[in-house]
Image (cartoon, rainbow, N blue to C red; front, side, top):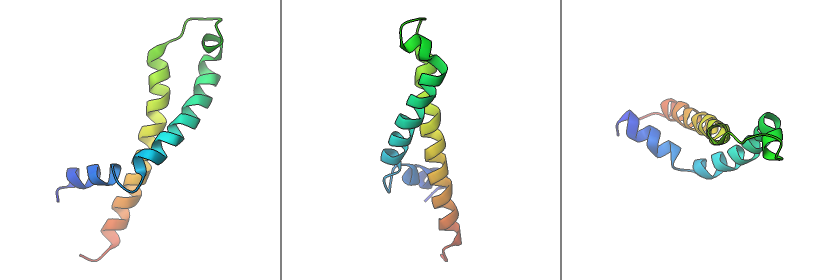
Length: 79
């Protein structure tokens, strides 16, 4: 299995997408309230790109952490 295939397999297995989604939902919501609270509550214009990125970044970080942990564990196992 190539390295890219292994990375994709790790990113899409063992509940990683579900766990990353929930982390992104909680962290992204908190960060959006902090960073765009005035816009979300009607006092300013909403920046939709910032909202999307504020959810995407925690998802990517959580997925990266899970994949790097799995890949490190796979290297320690005897072949």
